[in-house]
Image 1 (cartoon, rainbow, N blue to C red):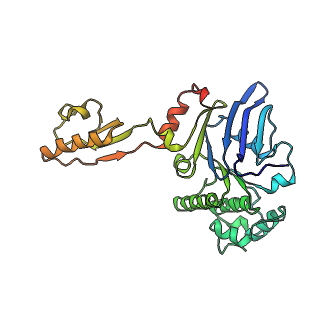
Image 2: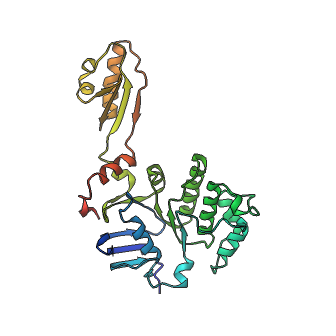
Image 3: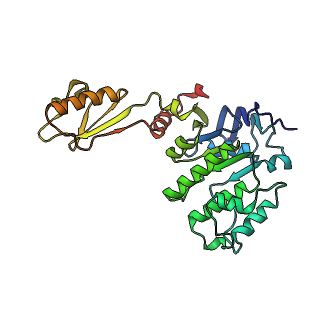
Length: 313
């Protein structure tokens, strides 16, 4: 019998280990996902993300460790578990055959005891008016939206999204993000894998970064950014060199092809000094930009450690 109490984690993993022959793909990871949380798994290819997700979905068995998903052991769970889980795979869920969008959703919906309204799902994924269009005539992005619809038709409590916006143009990607936000507002739990750092930063309440089968960091995106620096760039005025800049700037600046760049944990103080220097000389600083730290910067720094932060899981 599952435990669906709101205070019980939707997912609880303890000491998960999975090997393929001599290769240990997952090396004793532990984490929890709260009910109603959007949780992102990040990491380079071979980090253990796919194996972890497949175990949570019940498609693979762990070698050792404890796994609970919606109160079930997914390795042995049956119909009740399947009814509460939706999966959007990285590759197409259904062949792009002669079936229509509506027929595909009706077919998948029949596998669930309480499917969501088909037309509501079609509208939700941005395919309004495409009900009677055959899948093989849809664009790649539209077919990906069908994949999303198939994952939602069962009205699941927990949704696995594997690279959900691959093939989407920027407008479609933003629309998909808002859909994920809406699902979260309805109390759905979402486990997301993505290579788009902006996507994880925008959607996820927390992210876990895997490297070499271990979790090297697990925190809210804002916490991972805490030690990162902002980058200030501007074009050096004609005739100026780095030595001419104010001391705070000159001490850390790098100049390449006339563009000065520096990283700082104190962008406000640095900009104040730089602006004062420019105003005093009647100079306009061309191409002046301040880029705050992003999740991509933190991610690249983490995977660059080669898995040395193993205690973080």
